[in-house]
Length: 345
Figure 1 (cartoon, helix red, strand yellow):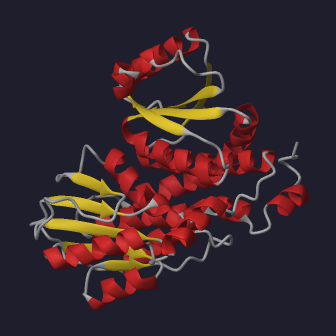
Figure 2 (tube, rainbow, N blue to C red):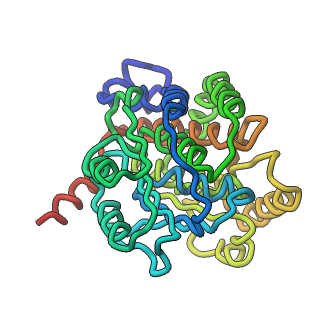
Figure 3 (cartoon, rainbow, N blue to C red):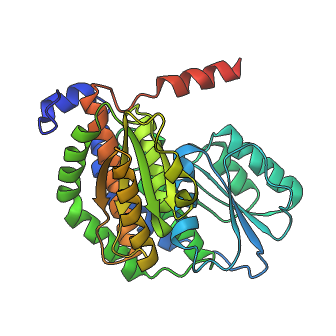
């Protein structure tokens, strides 16, 4: 088994330095938040709904915002992971386009439709075709420089996408996030990184050869989506997620067949509402009574934003360490690449 504390062993399996990108989450967050302070957009009170368009890691900001700020966003939010915008989109819709590379074909398709429909458009990217579309059409945009992602993999630029989306929404007047809250959250993340890595290492060993099924609630639901993706792409591990309280209305009866290799990973938080904390404990009880293994991770941080960043970091390290235990290069996504090549034919 790979020694997760042996840097020489890790470098052999991880030649593109996914480890470095994962360690730089706080740097990514700090850079993109500070760079965004130069942006200046006019606020638009006529926005009636928001449609996010993004695929894979480029949609992470959308999923986090939808769950984290569900109690403060004043307009409905819809996430599109597809080629087409929903029928309701019109001139009162803000279509927020995100593509790390700027070349994602589904997002570019939605950009074309948004222009045709006369929607309001804003976007976040490192450049590419999307960057050109946003500039050409004078749309509010943020083209970030990827300084702290040595692996070069878009899905490892989590900080750029999540904090970049926060910053854009702040500048557009759709959210009110104080500079001090973000600075404190990033500082906490830096201080907690050593403990995050330690907990992720221990859990990776326990999840090896298992199917991780993630359970979370409320403001951390978006994190579960991200953690599932990280385990899929980086660790090459099958994984899925469900959120409380919805799963209590169906999954309780689905724990019997077949569940041999499933481990339930609960993402806990002391900031969940009291009702959801009680539901989480009862759900663990039912899971264990059905003979399934329960593993847990408790989000750290004094604010919800701090806990979101904490779990983002934890998920990055957990999926990385699991990949190393499987002796898999965490940078490679051969089947995604194969699929894209075949699709072009």
